[in-house]
Length: 593
Image (tube, rainbow, N blue to C red):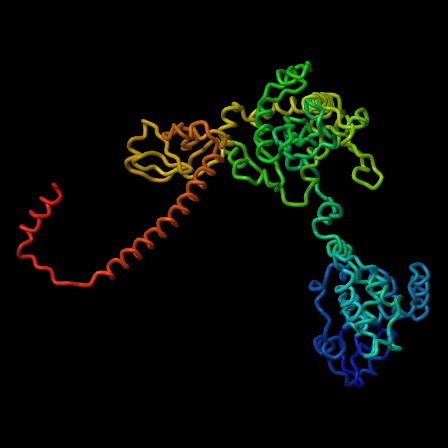
């Protein structure tokens, strides 16, 4: 019957086709030659064979079709599609040959390859036999091992040696005799270069030579949807700061350096919600920025002689999400305390500048908007600090107040006159400007901003420390404070959390359940003083006490020594006590004289 396997003359044959006129079309499954016709009488004495026996002898490693990889399954199906027109013609040598030639010419595959695939399939009747063999990595030769060693040691390093230099160092260490002479069997640079090009991975190359930070910033594939994938509406504020590219002077015309600009930009609309400009950064600039966020921007601009409409900068609240990087000021305890106001703080992973691209682009656009116009007024360009470059410090002209007015004009223009790319949901509904998109989105997401007062922001940004209730007051930073409403707490004692103003230790605030309860200073000497003064005072007091303790100890030692000398100078005697009262009376009379 068709597809039967038979033991026949020390081999295994498969019945491919049965024809009443021609007999049986069989194929030698072990030799895998083309199928041939035999009569039934020829197979007299042949015994049946199981598929497992064939696989055991001819293809012991043939896997099941469903167990091989999708890529290999795809190739097997493609090969079968090529030979499938030949399978019905297997019994006719002429037609089979003609079809093999046709397929070979049409698909550019050799006839021998097509015959091999056909014989494999007919012998096993299993698509798995057409799957390509799984590639097995051959072991590295000794030269290739040396190549890999040299690349890892000399090329994939921060020294950034050239490929030729790494090759020469390898020859020195691996292919020279004891006298330092290059051996005859040393490989050529072309071999070394070929191995490098064949095995190098760009990711490893960049990280090993330039560092992971450079890779994450400048080379990592950017495959995300962008900022709006995790900021779907207004109210997601991105925070960052930069040093402005301009030198400033004070009111007397003396150079004071470059100012620091901190800003909060809405990630969805790209609108600048607030800013801070000053000569100091860190937590102080963040406090100024937070206060500016809740400022009435029309009143703020009016201070600088700039008149704007409320809808041009309609922001006097905190965004409900703060997005920051891992900068020192953003990772500080004080900044995280803003979460007490209901703000969620999201810290971005390191080396991911594209995740806060809105604020990075804001800095670029703002500085580009004034650089050319103020080119001769202390603005810094690309050749700063290069040999032969201009010393822009000598051209500084503006004071910080004058520059802030310039900055405000640039921000208003950025918010209201810069065409932006609208998200799909806003197209046709709003003009493509940042302030328009911000107001439109906020109408549908009113809870994405948090209304707070300046006092609440100032209180939440005060540094906090541990306080201790004792009978004689609340101890904070080694000072005592009082509040008449806390008699029971003074009696019971215990620890608490206290907020304090480093600029004035005259009052501290007990922080409990979101409330700030004031406590007044008991020791009036420190009233109005700074926390730095208090620390210096107690440091000086401790120093004086240490010096006094040293003198006290030395004085005790000297006294002991003197008394010891006196004691040793007097011999021990036996004193009579019988007439002590009369002797005392005599001595009193002598004192009276």
